[in-house]
Length: 366
Ligand SMILES: Cc1cc2nc3c(=O)[nH]c(=O)nc-3n(C[C@H](O)[C@H](O)[C@H](O)COP(=O)(O)O)c2cc1C
Image 1 (cartoon, protein in one colour):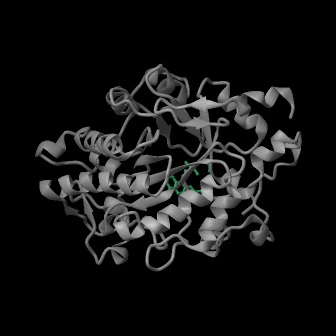
Image 2 (cartoon, rainbow, N blue to C red):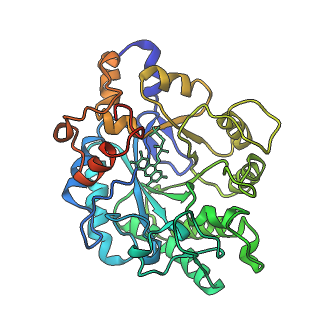
């Protein structure tokens, strides 16, 4: 390995005590390849195992915490105890190759395809997502039940041998719908926009303290801004961070397509969003940055901003041996465009492969 890449290979220990053997994380990526009954398929297991021997930690595709939270066809389930053997296989496939395994827990809210939830699309309020029906506003009792469901899926993650969970508060799904002034128009206590995200965090932390016998990571992922007005601004996000800082979380994960993106509005600051967020998080909670990191130098430059961990999504689908190549001094051989003739060698399940090759502009090389 070239000496300059050594910072990528430093250990990192989370507050909970879970230790990573390097600074690179596989970003959560839905692959739509589960079995019809919601169990993780063999193709998914092979896909994850292929990508778990280099990175320090793998965050899985999101899993739904209640049946009406299912956001994608072929999404594996975490909503009932019968899924524990399936989740255990996934944790084992990842950990067996040396990475820590983090389950991303999720509810799709107004974004779920109506056909996946018998038409019962729900959200904080009756504001539809583009192209989707008007969602039904959840009753206060139903909101309480979904908070509990996030805890129950966390218990299943503990019992399945995962090293942690990531609360999916990003990308426009239910938790973000409660935080956003665009989608939360409620007048009850859940109209306080931080109430639902923080209730989920508290429930997950409570379940971990009751059930985990070994160190267990709890992370939180959020999107820093929404394009619409009204919508989440950087000012809102800084408030969210201040609240999350009090929750003794292991990390915050900033969901972005581009690591170096800058604020749209809400702060008078020309630095990147990540620099602003990292400064606000301070010493209270480490931040994971992500977005269009493909080469070893991209990663090094990202780490040099002071974020302790970086996540890579598409780059690890395209190049499963990303870290190993750097470790072996072959960083110039890292593949950065998808090879459309190489599905088998890349160990990519058919549904994910079809999405990649049929969506121009999504992955480099397509
Ligand atoms: C195929 C695919 C599926 C994704 N699914 C999820 C998901 O389930 N949960 C999530 O938080 N982000 C998801 N994302 C976003 C990624 O985690 C990541 O933030 C984004 O791809 C930018 O990182 P990259 O440029 O390294 O790919 C997905 C991205 C891709 C490409």
